[in-house]
Image 1 (spheres, rainbow, N blue to C red):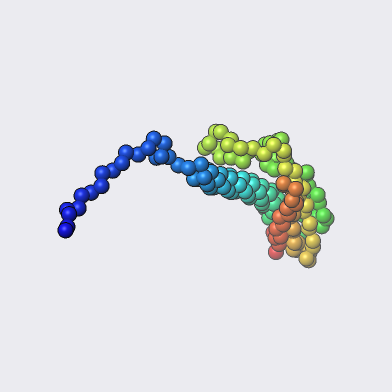
Image 2: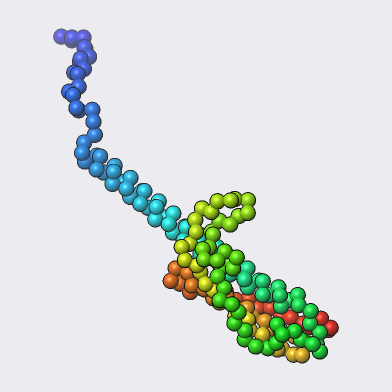
Length: 167
């Protein structure tokens, strides 16, 4: 004997059974904490990398400034300027950038009037200029900038050749 199939009537849910268990909430919160802490650690690392790269760019500007001076100063063979004499010259203990004084403004874009972040301590650098005679008409000039940032020492060096103007 086949009776027609009747669907079962749904029982009303008990109060409090349509929620997450404590274990599910703890697992979900742990995953969120891991993701957020990983994101914060990544942002801190990228910010340090950006500051170090900015300082390297400023140091490159200090090196290039002296290279430009060496390459553009007039030089006749009979009267060599003092800037081009064969010596090892230690320039200023420079604060990078020299115009800012104590604090380094990381965002010094002239179109943007607000500084987003600054370094609390100035980064001091020393610039060394080494001039070596190749012959009576030519010299080799090496400019080195050394600085320390975040307990690490950095050195940036560029070398150029210069000939007298009357060759």
